[in-house]
Image (cartoon, one colour):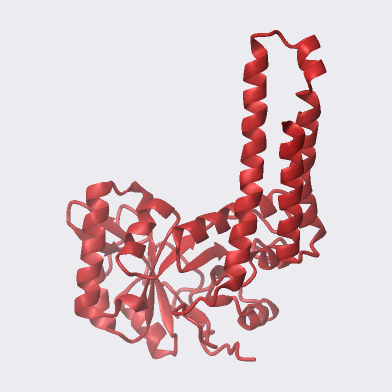
Length: 335
């Protein structure tokens, strides 16, 4: 039985390799290691070993555990192969696709270099300035207050006051109107219970009816279950991910899991931190593994070569520069 499962696993791995046309040695090794593991387990579970060394009562449990592991590995490879094939065939209609990919990160704050947790970021003034200076879109941090029933523009709790007062998302949207796209970085989305989640979706639908276009409102979250409520309401959604560095040996498996969440969650784009220049998260191997899947890349350092490379990457749709005092909105990614 185990040898048959192993053979099926090997076949699926080969099919996946054909579909992906992978030339990445690390990727091949990452796919081969589970095959070797199943083969080893197959040998350990052989009848002779079980008969000689394992008590009779433990044999069914050992067989069950090994069979479950083998089935899980086969399912994993099959799911990854299927998702890779489907994503490679997609055209991704409706996803933001413009030559000017740099958006404002919490607005444009000329007086305060570097992203900080307080001050004039995430304000009507900073977002308005970003659009005035040519940004096509702007990222804003929000939290939903279940007691108030409204979105608060703030990175953290306790809320950051703006001019001594809470800034409600409604005020921000009323001020900027439909000048550009808004990337809502939804903090603590996973903390919302069912009632709060329904209230948050209803509130955002109401706000976009009165102050904007739902298709220009990208909702970001790292919780795929709660994020799916905004997807179902018709909003473009951003699945926020946290991969390991590009060079880490576990990165291929983690990227595959994120692709599964993205595909079966039917989200619009994927987002991730660029990482450090000397040890990036969004490096060459990660870029290759993601294929044509559209992504938003944030926390990018102001490095000319890196920004130029991201601008020319067709799969990268939006870039957020780490220094919010810099206007890089004119960076052109047209061929």
